[in-house]
Image (cartoon, rainbow, N blue to C red; front, side, top):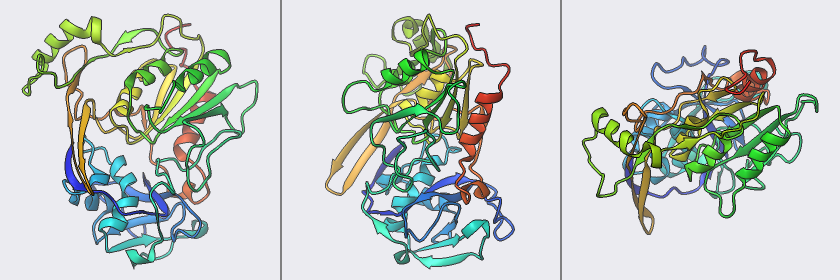
Length: 383
């Protein structure tokens, strides 16, 4: 990716997510190219509610509106993969008050959808950034200790514990976090220990998809799979940088570096019988590497939307209200093929349903929980 642009001015009091507008397609058909855009969660008096549909911004499909800002909006750079739209959906909350004049919405109070209305953006309440966190999560699902249902601001870097509505015999636990860049310490060790010591099944929710350090994602794979080396990240170091990398050159990199510098996941002693459902959306940098670390063994299943394909690193230069940033580098699989620009698809590509959102249900989570409870061919690599 690359961009030059201005920082956003505030945010709407509602967050947006890719979805399936199953309640309102008769009023406005879905776009042939882009997914529907729905409200995932909102503050009180936001002017929008969960399940409401954002049909257009400045007369354009919301994703098309975001793409029109490419190169001049710092808050909404596009993913490397043109088929990954989660970050654009997430960024609408800051792009609308910064760049938009009008929005067209379909309100669906109580699941009954009304005719589309075009409103001036000035009618939508604006709040300071940091007041609400847009994270692609309609809800959190722990038995206790969940973040506020409106703000989604985590009380700690990782929240974890037993899942609501499950039994001690099931031993189903959840963990949610936004990034792999903790300010101090390593909060992911406690999640790995919880998996080994207490859980039979896990729901790991990284739908916020933010980046950081890929080794933390690899750490979470250790209780679940045997050791593997999945690729090599080539950063723009002068002794190995070549802008015309192809598969043959990628294979040379793999042959030279996989054994010493490869992306290592798993452990020699994963826990037999442990299962994990991984929830993803957006996914940038370490948020790409995390599902790569998890996907493959039959005891791990990934649900949600494809990641951005930012299998690289990033550099930024900020000056006052303007900024310049670019991604650089590439990652190669063991066969030498490149990962950059190709988001990692989930095992089950699932869009939140409008009918679920209006009822306070989380479509992706409900499917993940169902899989944990009913999977039969999910023994993994250790019997």
